[in-house]
Image (cartoon, rainbow, N blue to C red):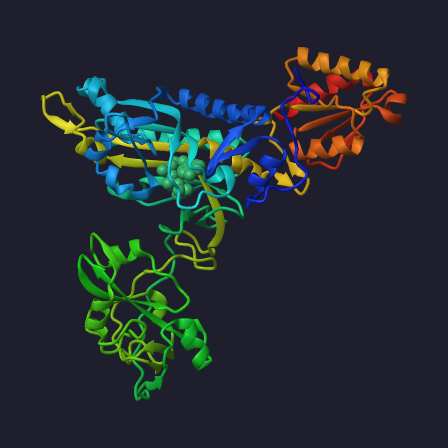
Length: 571
Ligand code: ATP
Ligand code: MG
């Protein structure tokens, strides 16, 4: 039984000063969370109910998929994380601490190491596998910019799951089970989501999906095709662009050398030459496995390192240092161009079709104009080297791609043997031969899911909870609590609904109706019943879904049955 008069709740009229996004603003204002530390939040009673509802959905679907729940400590010794290199690799993002004896500990950012060790500890035969386990646990990451409230905290709750098997087939079964479970989880939480192809990792191919909630405050970019539902994150997205090699132009005039003193950036040169970035060929110098290579892109496009790495057939690429740039262009940074450059060039598809380009002159303070690709420098092969963008052709169908902001709420990943090799977690097969266990890992940001729901389910007045995760299903508002008739009717409906198993919050505060309605909108409980005023005199109640303009007026005597019917229709 929940009554506003005694509920531990304080709604706020003003937005918290540090809140940048809607979910942070509304969850604080509506009394769901309070900031306790930078990147750390306390859940208040209504918020904790929502959190537990989301957690329950996650747990039910994990259990239903055959994953078994375990629970690790969050405070862990350094050694397992040293064995995999992550003690160092995590850099500043890891919370490191010491115990009284001076031993190193950490607050776990994820638990791959511990899950691997646990299975290694107990299982050793192919007959033991496959097995899949998970936990719902606090994670700690010293994020560079803890912002956006629950969307990116320094302490947050993650569901992390791991599958262990002896073959790619077993891995694929677990992966597909998780993929489908995630679809059910996000659907049940009332979230619109897109499973997007993400980095392929060690297994290659279709080895990783991120589950993205399209939202204007999302930090990630999702490229998708509304026609065929192709979706990928920007790191991974292909485009349907094709290689069209230019034919050399006979008797073309030579490029003109123009002075561009102190203008090393595309913006500066564009301004100086009254041109646009689309007329530029941008020449970026990379090192692919240590060897310099120039990457040519249209001026307004952005480089995609994964694509460059694959085109260069290299295992690693990085932007070249100043000394290398000087060596291959004989000029300082900012004046690289394809004509006369002293290293091989990788050319993006879109460069070939610029018919009069501006390029760096490989000389200090100078650019060349009127450059024709294929005429003034060779173009024998072109590649997809840049990030996909809206309006690019879809790689799967004939439509065009769109780009939306997204919040990553979950991630499924075919890990392969990365952790089993570094931690020596092996099984023996029927011939007594030892092999590393093949793993998958599957994460959901439970805390982030709560915030994502608010990001996508609110209006200017407050939150609009989906019924499945709402703190209560019904908000019951007696208009005038000093009127005994209003209270008699309200208490009766309250009791009837509670007896029927419906969660009701009654606003029994002695406040003006306008004040109560404002709070009801802010708090966002799905169904509102109002008792009192003229309606009560006529023997009717008012029932309204949060977010809908329509008010229904059942007879007082029918109100409980009507509300139960409404709720049943929505769940
Ligand atoms: P991001 O790219 O947003 O930093 P990530 O890829 O590092 O996330 P994972 O290691 O894949 O995150 O963690 C699994 C899930 O945990 C993510 O999909 C996300 O929902 C959630 N998550 C990660 N970092 C945070 C955070 N700082 N606060 C809240 N949730 C988080
Ligand atoms: Mg991720």
